[in-house]
Image (cartoon, rainbow, N blue to C red; front, top):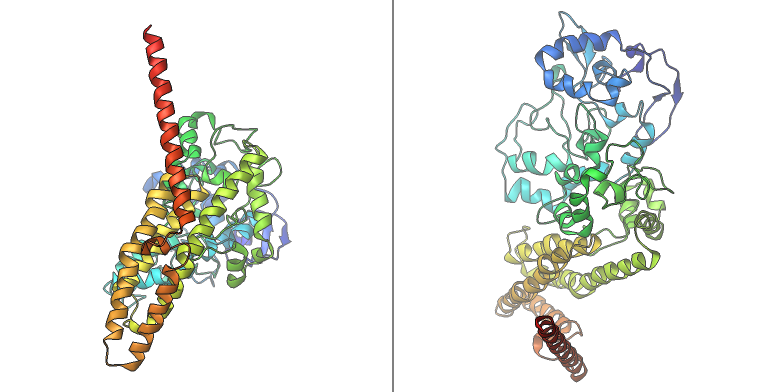
Length: 501
């Protein structure tokens, strides 16, 4: 950790015990710019004017916090090196980690460290990274720190959002496979997790920039979690785009209903202050479903697996916190009704597709080649839950109807019935005709599971087995729609004739 004693601030330090392992915190800003920072600026103004200008526009500059205050290092730090041995002769490190930021921003760092953002690096052990490292990639990116190589797809793809484990070479240099990197779950040389600069870009660290949806859009977009696209489709996104100049987005205090009255941004809902809540950098504390897994679960269950203190906060309390944000613009009945709709989509997806799909994949496993993604059905099922199923659930969570339906439940259903089930049937046939008794038994078990699922209330339409009651309800709905449509058409024609007269 970068020692404050090097900074010549002459400030009192208070003991701090938080999960980020920060040893001390600054109580107030220095009264003047340090001599070390002035020396840094003299050189960097000449060689890196863009960086210097960004810092000059920052609140750090106005608080006399500069290059040295953030980049100073102990000789024993893993990534410390002597910068300019002829002139400066000071130990610094390139990375300013959350542990360093916590010297001044202890509350924000504590919240961030306890969030899912800080744990984003856990993807390195997931199916996603198997795809990037093996299926899509290879080990052709060879660096000093990784003589056996890395996958370029993982290094330039996955790691840039989820974060790399930054590897330090001799003399404090950073391995190019792991740096530059501002992944939100980056594992830093000092052992801390996360990267404040993922949202507050260097060296201005603008709160205005972090509040805008584009900051989140670096990672929260694409086929598997198109949050930014869903937001842009939603009324919230439309309102934001139409009223950006009225948002007062650079205000230090930024409370919906007080400082702005138009559509919220990602930051407003998931992190921002309200009249009843402070800003919170733990982005999961207002989320009542975790829609990342094949089957949606409550967020506290995931926090418990990660060992996060947030596991003590139940989904009901988190939902109440989000409802508090909504209440700045919406009535209680409106908010409650929205959650009825949202829960409806999650439960529909979970019960109709996710749980039966997982059960069938388990039954199919003995009939598959052992390597993940070496079977066609691996890809089909992965995209159903990882892409289409997420889009449906996330679309409903943010009021994006097109993503909920056409990019979501429609594609889930289409691929479930025209790809997933036919592929299961092929596996069954292959197993039944096998000479291996174990394969034959597995095929029989899979057929029984498939028959049970298809004959259930949710799927019996596929076998043309709708009950008389189901058919009657459907016919009544069609008849009612046609009658209403005809009535409206007749009324509109009459109104048009009256206007002519």
